Length: 198
Image 1: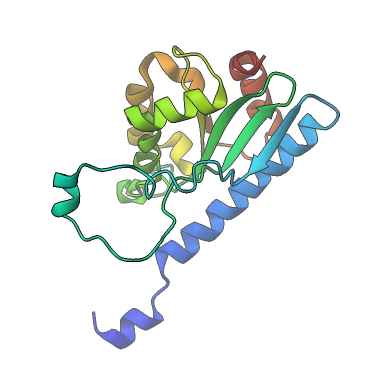
Image 2: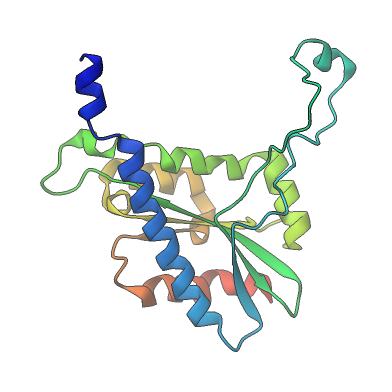
């Protein structure tokens, strides 16, 4: 494909990013309303981990083998949301991952995105430790909740991957296939995750 053709083509990240933004805002609006007048609140783009990577101390040997600029930069992790219990000081971090998927009328390749894979950074030992400590959630609990929204929540391949990855921690993800159904996502939080913040 030539340069001119590429310029005219839709950029999938622009389309996908816009849809993801709508999904995230809807989630935020639902829980802002749900938490009104309670000890709970939802924060958008919590910044407590915004500089965790650039502040990490590396050994002299590792530093010798990498580029070390003479400037300061910020490099970290900013989850989509944090749900706080103001009374207990406990926090659960939330990622909303919207992705297309393989469903009726679409080809198998419609599920080729990797939003669900990118959410797996939350399973890494360093992030788990950090979120558990900061969120004051117990060691046997995952300190995060991932909400998968869009066709991915019905994609036969992706749903199987997600169930396999989470194993015994199935409470920590939600397949929100119908974003018009606000009660389902609220009920999931109230029945399966709220207790960890009490």
